Image 1 (tube, rainbow, N blue to C red):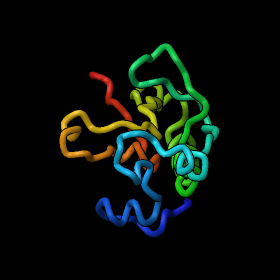
Image 2: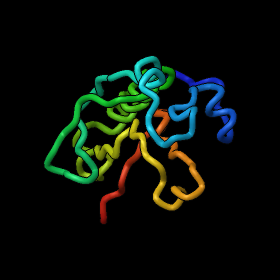
Image 3: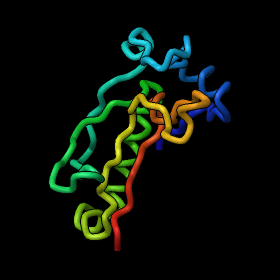
Length: 128
């Protein structure tokens, strides 16, 4: 299993490790940061979009420092449960990774979401 190290805590450490996608604070993605840090990765198996379950994705954008660890984790999950198990229990839902936008409740104070840096994976749980 690929381990991510160091694991940053708080905004200052996150920006120190991954860089700041909006260093000037204008709310617009810094294209130089994006081109330097965000990479397209291939998934080990297709996953359904969490918001459109009839659509499958096979690639995702993530920070270059974590993409391989995400693939490794997905691969381990797929091998452990098998595709039928993942599908049956709704664990093959992909909510995305890199997505530059402010959190809706934080717009007025200027906080970016973790997905703005591309180091976390989102998953929307389906209703059971």
